[in-house]
Image (tube, rainbow, N blue to C red; front, top):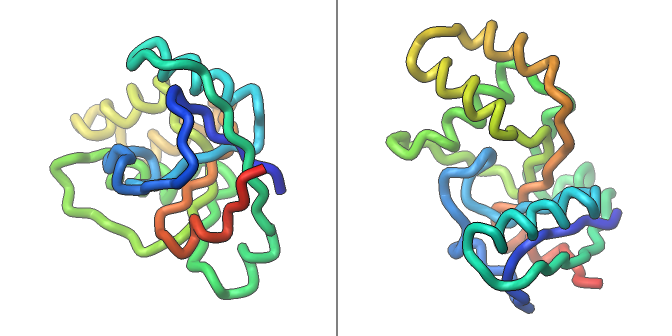
Length: 156
């Protein structure tokens, strides 16, 4: 499968330690299977941090998702488990850490961040959060959170 990473700086080696630890699926390297989504991410990073738009392309063998060499979690759609997982990863006061090499699931956009905030303050329940998330148009993101997983990505 072809995956894309949008950024504002060209680099050759993936360094997970440089990633923000409080993202949807935790600290890791994030990609998408939609080139235009990676282009939008690159533009967003340039807007906030400067630099130039860079879209990197990678190949990843999908059979690795099922052959047991990697610990994989797939969220096929927004649900309570997905919402709680994102909340735990984004909550910087949390000591939550998972042990997945790869996580695949919907991207939590700014609207999702607002809903997560409402859940955190207690104005909606986890069930209501999951119900409201069902109506969002969300694209998948691919999280590579370990050096072992990153080693299976091949730059094109």
